[in-house]
Image (tube, rainbow, N blue to C red; front, side, top):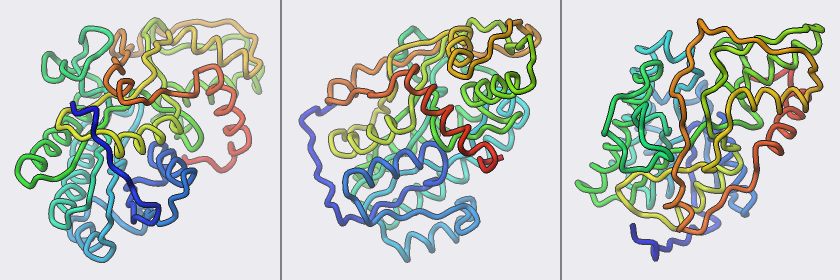
Length: 321
């Protein structure tokens, strides 16, 4: 793995963060800003459509970024993924092909491709190691998105092999935090549950329905921890294999709901709608490799629920829909 790899990123380096206004990208942007980087470049989708190959190439030609972080993606929760597989496959493939091909042409000093731990098999041995990739069947509800991200991982490997590029790929677990998508339907589990519990409290509902059995175990990573991990990996990691970014700690959905309810002040009862999908039964990342590089998450779920709910309450009239 080359744990002795060290790379200094000059404070005036031009750093392009694709998807900088999204949940992952905004956390990465804040991480660079907090360390004094001032030459950060981002474009909203209205300014640059990364599914447009020529526009993406023109942007790279004009800007010539020194560093590229590809955090741009179409993302969504389990129900959105299951209902729009063709869109998730097509849009994510086009975005990453255009960004990675442009990077191959204009050669930044370093590139990081952001994937997802959904690339791993549904029944991978827990905690999930990076070498479990391609060893079993994917979770059916988001297999289209997973295949697109797997293609990105192999594209990064190919860039290293064919062009000698210093390109890496990182696989974060379930993200949450400020700037999340709280739209229902379409949201991931964390923001969807937070919003639904908030609305149940306001409505005075005495019963809250948890979709599915509530028994799946998930690992939740705050977007600001992801941001710090990306900066750390660009400085300390240079290998063809993807590397996991997570907490290594799992939380059952039923327990997550109970913790959220306590923070929000919802005191009703809980029921389950077993007609809804559960997805993968258990998904926890093995973070041994990134831990060996000296990185650790700082924000636990309890703290993260409180800060994310505070952000939600403050922005509930303006958050992304």
